Image 1 (cartoon, rainbow, N blue to C red):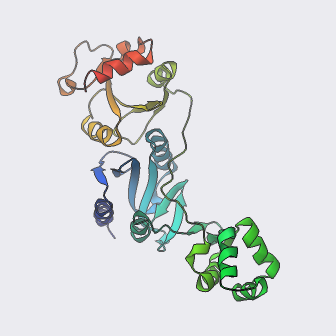
Image 2 (cartoon, helix red, strand yellow; image 1 turned 135 degrees about the horizontal axis):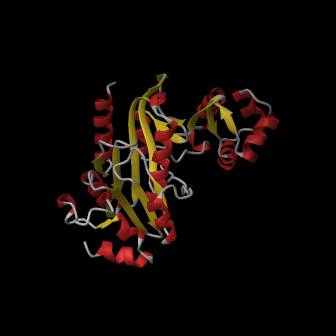
Length: 295
């Protein structure tokens, strides 16, 4: 399936689920979307194996600052992706269009792909409840799925992961409720790193967490509590940054060359400082006050 078709299908599923969408033409993700407080950054790929560690790392980094979920929607990863199975590429949850659509409809998957093959995690408490509700003994249900009664007791007490073959037999006997659902919409963990350039270093000095980005429609993302600032250096590519910041409730800042005394025409209505002006800021509230004056 061509990437454009995958992109169109993904956008349709998101719109039907009530998301507001912004397509991104320059970045490590192709779609930014929001529904209430839920934000997704989605990369569309024909083959998930084509994504690099750099792209995946950028997705996770940006998502952590925006309290967003990074996701990959793909048709295959070498071979076709199975329906209702969660895969992973460099730590980013990877789904096919069917799995993604079902997840949006709150039909979360419970099977994931690992180096050992497909596995499902059993909800031990629910497993015991369903077994007793159906009047099944440990030994009888254990025989059905091909394990010892002792092993089945371990499933009930430790919420173990089991192979797909055993999961299918367990599903046929007790249904899907005995499995732990995989929340593919978990937000990315906060990504912290040492400052890598004068701009991020200054953000740190002002009390922000900040990171330089790559493959994104902005150059730096910074956060201090609920205040998020997307920063574009030079002001050459501000349109997508503006649209994205509106979607995720972030503020914008353009930093242009320290030798340029006059603000470029294309950023007249956008908060903008020369690099020297930015580096001379002494407190975060100075910066925030300056940015809020443009609202």
